[in-house]
Image 1 (cartoon, rainbow, N blue to C red):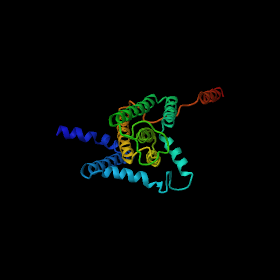
Image 2 (image 1 turned 30 degrees about the horizontal axis):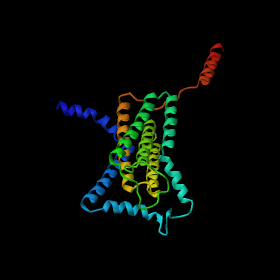
Image 3 (image 1 turned 45 degrees about the horizontal axis):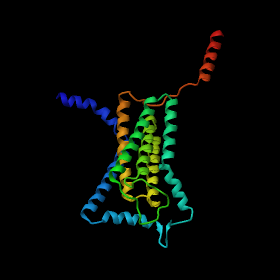
Image 4 (image 1 turned 135 degrees about the vertical axis):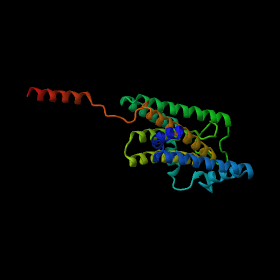
Length: 263
């Protein structure tokens, strides 16, 4: 049949879309959806269960006799504040600027624009969701840092997922070694998870805020990842970063060639 023949010719392209690192990200995204859906079902059919879970997760990490301090050594509080900065506006902005500059110098202009669009789009989506839900910050325990924006979803969790997973996916598309691709996307996921957990430990977000932020961040990064793959398959975005010869190297090479010719 013509339709089946046409479909069979597209199978090699379809297989390329489902590489190991893509399946990892999609699997995490659907896991987040399942977890989020489970909490919503509990909240709907079991009264206040979701809030009980949120409150339990917030208090379990605090010292029972002094809830202003986290469990563990005295340096834990400062370490958590340092780790949460990985999802802060300053660190993420500098990261995007540095990567954008690097891609621009490598003349990968379309990849650079894709990173910028993905980041700005994720930021706008996060702000819209916060303004829509307008959830208050947790007040069951003292917060270890000052936050004034709405609590749901966690902007740090969502934007760290958007930035780190988008950049990780870009690097995996430019890398040919499967071990390096797996390592890169694993580091991106680990950084995202660390930021989200730190927000709960600091008492500035409910766990459900972080979970939804992760879900939306994974969704946005997956969407940008898929767009990148499609554009690369159509040769509209650079497939890999090619090494550009330095002007000094070209000059030396030309002198060497001239020397051989004169000899």
